[in-house]
Image 1 (cartoon, rainbow, N blue to C red):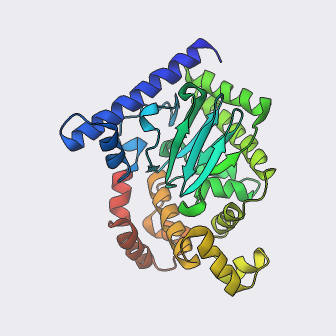
Image 2: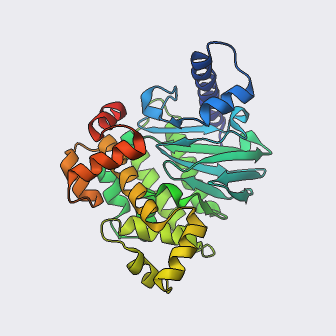
Length: 317
């Protein structure tokens, strides 16, 4: 990795850290400690596009890990890919702990609750985040072109699906990571190159994820995402070879929620994403996520987000 890339990653880390401190001090009205930062950030969902202080380039930000955030549980409405270039990292997502070493990566879907619990080398952990402006219909379409289940998981990612670990990304994928970082570091960076490189990177990570040992929770989450408008407890149980009663109990053990609750929340989370990154009408969004009556979407938003779809869209724009 060349010095220009390293300087960009360090500069962006400083910007992220400064913005976090500023945001926290704005809310508390005084200088803050690490504990106060943790309290503030564990109570909110971070939003890159709302002025939380992160300077994105065409909807993408890459930075070294900030030690300021180590141990801070948080969630956000954007995708985050973390690459361990050196050292070791302990990631905790939705209560599940993953240990990562050099050459490993982990992807956090929107709204997953996670923290970097330990990081032996902050300069060895690179975070790449994609804001809503990157998550366009065309980007979704490119990922879903082959109807890959894991691709659907990336795009619709139920909140309870957790992290996606990819072991030993390999030299070819690492080269693509460095190609993306090199483009982001250029003063005349190209949005076309950035988007094309991201698609290649995600495709290679998907291939690595598919070859990893079975993750039943992730597979079930992917199946729900791919079949969100038609999935039922019975069809899901049949898909994974269980009777409905046993599958219901297994599901609650894996996800900590009932099947119906996860499907409902997944629909609402996907609807919130569509409201933020498309111009579809609220009625169209309701249809896409599987609500025959838009009124049901309004009721769901009130219960889950304490707001209306229209107000959510206004906030996200």
